[in-house]
Length: 150
Image (cartoon, rainbow, N blue to C red; front, side):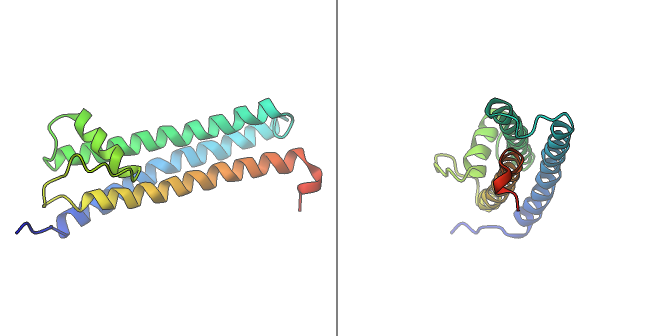
């Protein structure tokens, strides 16, 4: 019977999650500074295409962060000895992080717990990205439509 290890994957998962939180802080900060800059320049809520550009750029910041975070998990999978090539590790990481869960690649019992830990991390960070983009859109709508301000 294969025993699923808890301690080592748990520690690695906590370290990886902390690392992804640090990575995700950068697009959050960048987005806030970007919105503040656009507002100072008078571009917030001016028109559809300017607002769409602001939303697209904010989404791009979040997307890049997610791709880097998937890469961090992939590197950890390689360090743990589960993969020898980055491409396979990155694919497996992306499947876990996005909660797609194909199940076509299964890690060894010793490190198998990293999959659900990465999925939980990805779901939480997608939530953070969604909240960030929602805040941007809300700011744009309030700037453009005076009747929607509180």
